[in-house]
Image 1 (cartoon, rainbow, N blue to C red):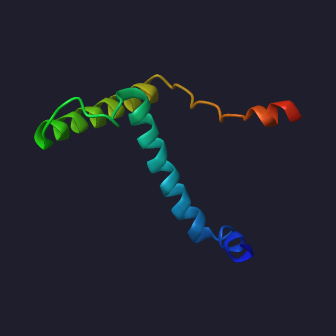
Image 2: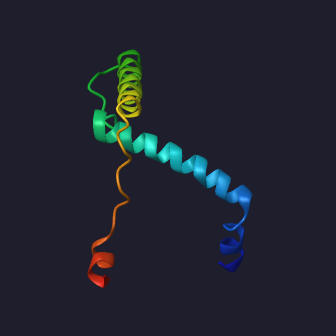
Image 3: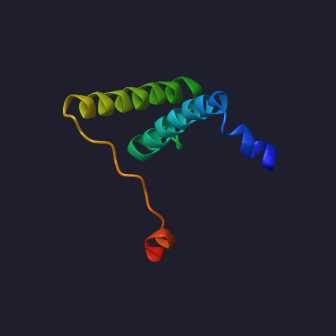
Length: 85
């Protein structure tokens, strides 16, 4: 456990985690806005097309946010943290 915690302080680990966090954020945004976890279609061709449309929708959302200078959402604070404050 101590070795892993020590490893997390290195620049290489933080760079890899930063990349992973970006991927996780993209997946989360796609799930929240397009419902991509469930396919509306049967067959791989139609499902793939649905995924392409979902990716396009996420890109359009991000372009709109960038053009309108929409700020990023605040980091969520847990209920326990709020009670402690």
